Length: 133
Image (cartoon, rainbow, N blue to C red; front, side, top):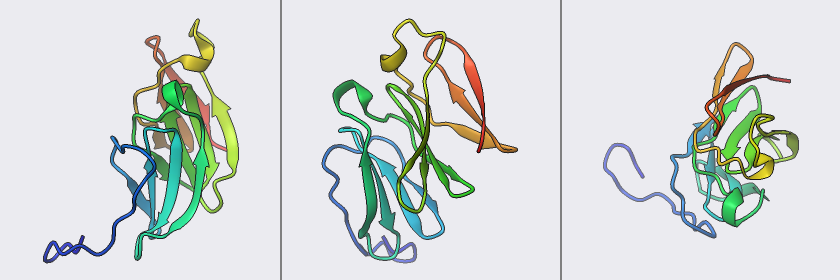
């Protein structure tokens, strides 16, 4: 929407509901949907740059993506992901070593990034500190 007058500029139809706020970095909008898809869109026109599906059902994303240093960080219900911001290639995946459920750990929060470290809330009461690379 136009910030000055509220006029609609463009829309994008995701394959499923979007519950979290998007992140906008370098004229790219990064957004998650309930069906497990992460989208990168051109902020100026709303066209898709890339999309990647990390699963469906219990694997969808509840938090907003965070973007830093050319990497998109996404907290999903099965863990935390890092994707290349340019092409969506997966860089790494992390799940809690403390969770008895491992691959369905229910990560509800968005990651936080400070000083080249990604901080992740874990479903079992821990905070994980993952070095960026």
